[in-house]
Image (cartoon, rainbow, N blue to C red):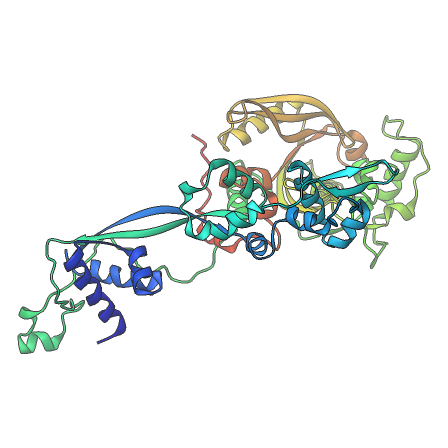
Length: 509
């Protein structure tokens, strides 16, 4: 007979005598680990109606590590009091007292508590802070109480005492789960093992008639096979990608994480003295530090637009430097990819001599900024961008595209607010009404690309380019109820969260 079967039989014998048992009390009585006892109870519970079980929850107070230390050595205030010399002429300089105690946190808290208890006082008559005993002796009630915590029920400790000890992180409430056991309808002292399978031998020997079989649980789920799981960001990203494809967009190649400052800033009409190009906002590469493979003719047009103005613009009127535009950076936005694609479209139009062909492009990929890390910001995140290039498209077309895009996300209430971007004019921030927060929140940025950016590329003057973008992390956090971005991305991500979360279904009804 196995040890667990023997324990199960002992439980039945005790239950036969007492009619009712509690697993926690029984584990203390038999000096058996509670979990082992629960295992034996569960095995009995699986044998028909042998016993009835009801789970109960009780609370008890346990000492923390700090609480156990105080129970053994005394409270912080008692340590401070005992460190003060006794006698009428006694006393010690406050700074020396703190130094003698050693542990700054013990000294600080203990001194404060001892003062509030009026165990000690400070004498400043000698122009020094001299700490003296205010009473002859003390009773360390905190230590006494902590020593008795294990034998007290939670109701035997006053609410004020519990509040004070919890605040000092000396105790913690622990929920203890146990089982109340009673006799079942088929209670017996003889345990008959129930069979789980009908074997060929039972049939041939006709012994199955004398066997007891466990009931089949047709509602039980099968064991899930090991498999890979998509990260929530990838699930939401796929939903956004599907929306763009449904709207007739083509995906841009975004595998170039390192960009030259030319494509990342200058081609977008961002001046070389713009704050976004500082070290505080951008990651610059040390090796290779520079890019020399830039389109010379196009770069000269960009230089002209920046420094002296061209194509009807007065530019920024500053000394544009080639060495600045050659600096390699980790791209700060996917608009650098859009700039490359628009330049490519312009070159194809000029090379083939054919009319401009409209294009609808999108990208979803990582960008990098030198951000201060907190619950809503990372140095690496994803940007979603849509771009439409066509003859005569207007700001009204852009607003219609954005409304249709967000309607597919289930976002119906939108507002547009004028803003400033270096490479779009006019520019608009996109706001949506958040039902949970009961206010309008920014969800994206948009605009019509400036002629100073498009005409140097060689695009026809009657071609306008519309663009809008938003982040991927924020809608993912909202969708999956994550309030800290570091729980979504990075080395501290809980893989179980990735395993458990379902596919992303956007409520676009």
